[in-house]
Image (cartoon, rainbow, N blue to C red; front, side, top):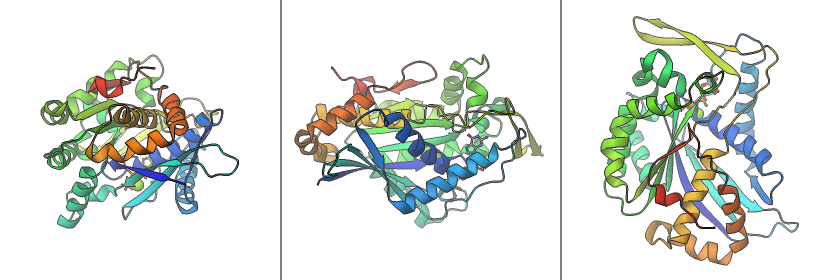
Length: 326
Ligand SMILES: Nc1nc2c(ncn2[C@@H]2O[C@H](COP(=O)(O)OP(=O)(O)OP(=O)(O)O)[C@@H](O)[C@H]2O)c(=O)[nH]1
Ligand SMILES: [Mg+2]
């Protein structure tokens, strides 16, 4: 059985929601692919960690008033390998491994050591894609006044700029604003999310990524991690963020994750396009693999064709990286 790996780096400061995003992506994927021939699995230890995170999210919404008691912070970098294969009685088919590297938020913080910073650089430079997880409350509440403190866009920009300095092969940057239901439900204009992103990450999008459009694609794929928690305001101390005031929309609302499949669908669409274009270097290992396992490639292509294209979803640059003739 052949197994091929694609590395994906999870970026963002502590508490933005990286591990929560992985937890809902894993859970949600199993549900969205249940009627298809694709299957997603991971090792028992990873499944345990993701399940624990998922249960913590459920605890947050047990009552109408939402209490965010914080979650276990990721202290060491951790790989979560999602194995994508076709349903097969004998379990002998080839599968594709998506290796998500969950970088602890502390590594992006002001106290990060040189070694930790080097680790981040190495991970970004050697990953086919990065998922910049963004706390949407910080991005948009109060006109983004806590964005610098909580999402650290300057540090993320600097990291990507340095890591992508000498790349010669395509890369995908996924902007994944999480905790965003406050801005996508109840008649809110979903276009505001894209506007805020382009303003707050303008440096990264316009100055760093745009000149590399031949090699770098960028997409905006928001995820409603919990889906039923809205924010009514915040508490700060002298302008320094302390906490959000959160509540459910209706007392009986269950967890209603939305769009957690989208980062994966875009990732796979990008990957298959690399194969169709028969890219060299970094991506060349996929050429032989997909040629040999055409049935798996076809299943992944079908799944990837479900990329949402309507606002707030947006291809920010590199449209050709997502064009596949059927
Ligand atoms: N309001 C709201 N809060 C959420 C949501 N998802 C996660 N959180 C909160 O966000 C916080 C951070 O979640 P994590 O996923 O552990 O963050 P992280 O980015 O992995 O942080 P580190 O491991 O420290 O790097 C937790 O306190 C969660 O309760 C959401 O959909 N809505
Ligand atoms: Mg974490």
